[in-house]
Length: 329
Length: 155
Image (cartoon, rainbow over all chains, first blue to last red; front, side, top):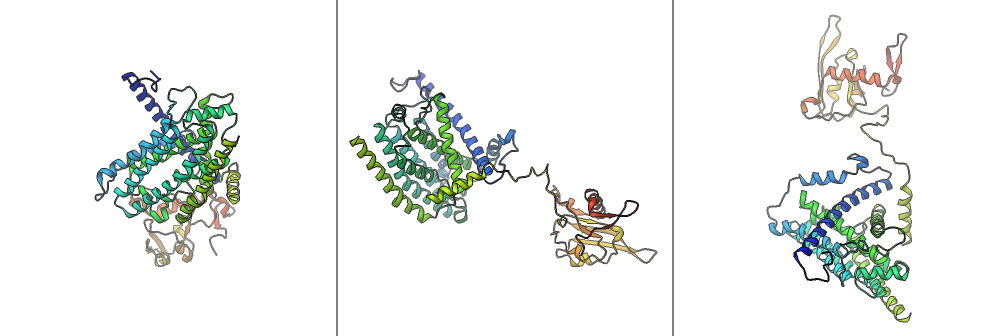
């Protein structure tokens, strides 16, 4: 029933897939809820504040309360917007972000560990689709600030997609496979995590993924001083929550990818695989929040220059060096 | 790159430090003596000179008084409209007898604007509460009554 990759699809295996998807969705929602909580707590602590502590013990239900508030808010749709696109844009943004999770190997033996032969490629391809939702949302709002915000978003995502992809290629070259499970296994067997031999690729990945997630210091699409709120200016209530959800699901997915590519995924001594994975993903997410508490926002022209003139050459150098070393050693 | 690391170090060092946040509604800071909160009013001192009402930039004070048998003016009504009061403290500055003063009450959130018309009795209650909360700010006479206010808000 669980081994759906090797057999033709049946109703039973379809049911299993459905259950798997629902379980992952619930897991993701919990992760998103508590990464928002953790973000507010961590940044609060760094700013000598306490952070949320009113709703539930230690404020643990704060995100749930926020979501409830968003759900009961009025859902405003601008009269002159492109209604259909406006309505489906958050969904178009969310679906790829969620689908990208399907290739992340959460643990060694877990039933939801997808074993797609083109894992890393699949991830990169899907994560690029999220930008369609953002673009459509910005365009359908019929608001010039939303449009500018979404255009910026698109330019940024496209620019940083390339160094990101190239930094992944370095890892793929080392592991000799594009299957994320094989990459984890290769790291487990070689005895070191790729963060050490691929340190340059790691740096590029870190910077490019931060930009890809629209997080500080690359959170230009939401530069409220220039653009009101960026592409989601016109969105309210539930639909806005969906964009937020997309952002944090994508953060989780990127954390999963990072853990898989550079920190050996679920592999590690003593602890069970899923716990190792959780620790590594948590580490990435925490570092993102740490950077957010530290850095100011970049200027938009510096942003593009940085991607094309610094990150891309670095990623290429990393790629060439990896390839040469791989051939020589 | 190096500066970036330095910045990260700075934020990380703040992490274990003592937090400055107060659990506000439960735990309140000590308001300074010259805090400009809602007024308190001492009707006995008022000579109905109307200066506070005249100096008020938002015209939120209205008062009326009558002349008593000893030819002295006695206050009858004294109202402050806290819809529009800006707590500028000009009324307390001009008051020759210091019958109108500022207190450290400030939580006036309410569901109806009508509740923001503060009359003489409310303001006097506020004065009594203030005296109770800050006994150290008053000079006591022999019987333990408040003889005068220590120099603070007054010149």
